[in-house]
Image (cartoon, rainbow, N blue to C red):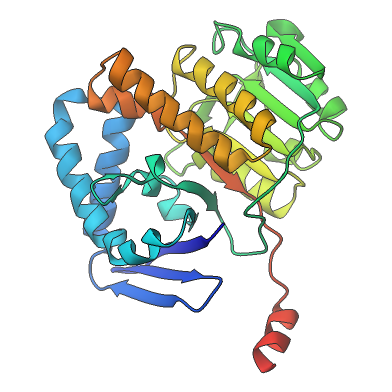
Length: 326
């Protein structure tokens, strides 16, 4: 698998991009004075998807075209020769739907496997993840179709609890022992992209995530893929490899049920969470476009919502210096 890294950040009025691969390609691009305009268009994309504002389709398409032209098109020739894209983003861009941008006229997430990171570091582009045990906790108001219970039937060694039995104590008891953790509950996020999800009127704190060590954590909870508190806990204090959650508010049931079931089935078959989410989102897009024939904004709200992160082992500065000297 050939990987292209795309790192985005802002510095004052400037929007900055660094792109590289594991061979010889490396390029930096500074879009001087464009930070405010680009952030405005990114906010437009996010807000229209979040609110499912179908009447703003033309505005959505215009913003998507503009952002794609500025942030992705400069690297078209590199994307042509790489089949895996890693996005590295920081706080002010954590909500940016970069894998939604257009690559040769079509959404990137339908054409390439992608992964997000919140830091640079050592990664595994072709993981082999065996899911043999799982913990599944469900608030049935968030999981009315009992997707968690259906996933529990797929994984041989599963602990499943719902509603008043779905206690945070179970996360503390089993979180370091299972391969997969799935929680379906309601999430809260403030204007600074910090928040929590709640089980039985108890909030799950970032500190409670530091002691779990599953291969994959999957939160079926609104906007928790851009919860900076959780992301920082996983990256800098925890022992979780991969994290999936929606960047926007997702369905209770319907597409969320399909996403959870299809992803689990595919990751158990391929042992590759990147491939599993890629195929799941393709299937969701095709289903809601061709079978349900929904409006394009609603299709994206249902098919694009979930994002995957890999939490990396940070580079050793001393090792990097020695390599540079050599």
